[in-house]
Length: 337
Ligand code: KG4
Ligand code: ZN
Image (cartoon, rainbow, N blue to C red; front, side):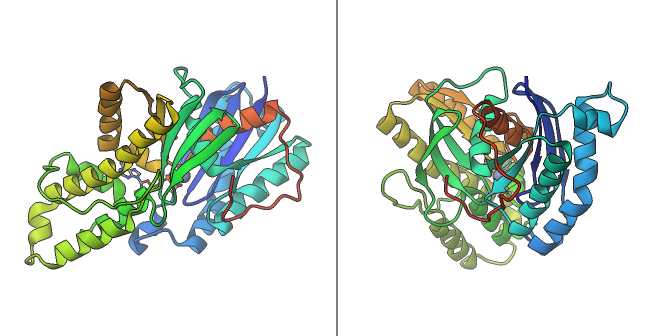
């Protein structure tokens, strides 16, 4: 029954979670609102905010997990291991979580577990009681990545398709920026799309071979389209524009997912990552699954965008096989799996 404290700090969310034997007891997330006015995450501000947030976030996660324990020391002493996001991410942000996890590991004399952020997004699907069976496919769509992953077991994951340029989250955020919406624009496109007509406008879909994706052409296609319009066009057509852009992104994603199912014969299909919070994508996956005879799985909202519960569940499997790292380990901005 290992009790694990996990820390996530790869981008602009500071998060801590406690899991006992693979069951999540707490998942506390502090969002950084400081970036909104800059139109994107400012790395230096992100790492400073992580430094301010990390102690209260870890403290809250421990208190929520162990309300019966009166002192911080008593709560810390229940831990069997400390896990952290080692890669990929913003290096200044990763360093804060890594150093904090290492300090706890050293002072409590408990093993340290390094977790790959993208693997953790996939394994967020193992948090609920109703889980996919292995092997399963996972479409992981976040602000920095777009991948199709074949999961043969919790720690045997293979990327079988990925974006050759922008990630799906970037496609949402950059399109939103062209529409004059603030960062991060993905959730706003989702919101306005609900009122709009997805067939109002059509944008070119990329032709990329195999299971890989491309989103940079979509951004250009939207830009050229908007440049040809009269002033006031965006304001008058915001909901239809959002619905049409969202529809195009979802079609690009689902086409490749169908291809992946055909190629592998695997019909247990999950989504993960920040963009899997998108209501259009969640509905479209459900509908496609029904038509195609797939069993589909979508993590709860709080486990889609960056969170430490997904780091904790991954660490749980790593603990079982004794996959620990020495204190000399360093975080890295980029990492293959
Ligand atoms: O996984 P995540 O929280 O962070 C990264 O690891 O990148 O993903 C963040 C991305 C952002 O691009 C954000 O706009 C997008 O997920 N996102 C959404 C929605 N919620 C978050 N995109 C579309 N619709 C949403 N509801
Ligand atoms: Zn992420």
